[in-house]
Amino acid sequence: MGVDVARFIAVFGMFCIHFGVPFAGGWPEVVVAQFFSGRSTALFTFLAGVSLALMTGRTTPPTGQALRDAKRRVAVRAVVLLVLGLALAKATEATGFLLTVIIPFYGLYFLLAVPFLRLRARGLIIAAAVSAAIGPQLSFVLRGWIAADTPLSALVSLVNSVDPGHLIAHEGLFDLLLLGFYPAASYLPLVLAGLAVGRLDLKSLRVRLRIGLIGLALSLVGYQASFLLMPAGPPSPVEGTIPVGHPEWLLAANAHSGTTFELLGAGGIALLVLSICLELSDRTGRWLAPLAKAGSMALTLYAAHALALAWQITTGGWPLSGVPENLAHLASLGPALPMDDPNLPWFPRDGHQPEGMVALINTFMPEVFLVATFAFTYGWRHFFRRGPLEALVSDIVRWTTTSRNPQRTTS
Image (cartoon, rainbow, N blue to C red; front, side, top):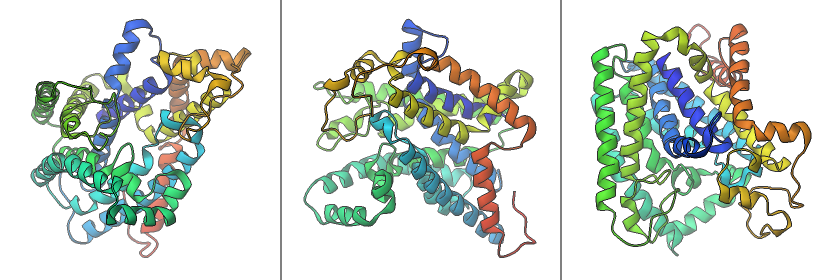
């Protein structure tokens, strides 16, 4: 239940970033949005690793045939998430640069985590630490080679020309691994850290306290070290993967930068959030049940919010809710919108804004979507055990991995 509550917090953070903060305005809204920027993604990714541990033996890593079965189930789940994510990315093209669907990246995270399923917590912690120290720097170097006229650049062009993911939604193998907004080369350490934490006894108060304190320490070290080490000069990008040509920006800890320091800072907060959610769920479980039910349907809610955002943009109602002023201005340009940017959201070119009920929904979208979330998840869970997309993924995994041996059951 505590993990589901943490999942809801991660998804709620994404709601706040894309729709605005419900029932808030002014500086409280700014503070909440700034807190969730990047950190909700890190929490979402970290919890993916925790989920992997819960699906594959919890505190005891599988061995023998159980390990082979677990690897097959996780690999199939990864492929399903890749396909589902690509479909969602294509369906939400209208969002442009305002939303990068993370689900295909999730699929690659799961696939890359398969070799680590046999490890215990200590080995996973070492793997997470090493990959956090090396991954972002290696990603930076490789992206530099790709940007230059090198054999790697030619290889990427060749693969992209036949890669279905790249051709369909610009989320092919190299996009997911290195070039996209949430590249696995940078974010896999969070998945491994979550897998390590999931191998611990999360029912233990001592373990929860230790997780929380370590998370707090890592967060302070990551953000403070970045603040002290960043050289004076041009500021680093507001958010997004560090561009090649600026190695000094690898010292930044900005949202979605994917640097070692951001992984430490945002990953530490993810640890702290999980420890608090685990303890609060035990002490006040009944009061947190609505959050847990919503969190258990995180995949469904993520897809729903992505589709709702695309609808807002195409109807011209997105700037009516609490979005940043500069982006609201861009959305209102109408005929003055630049025509040569393929990544620009599909704001109405005639500059019109919706009226009537559509305008009302858009104006109060943060509140409308939050209330609808709780109403839908409560009603759905009253009749069904899993959310729609969660059940679809689980059923496909079960059908695929049990076809050869109908007598074997999976959890």
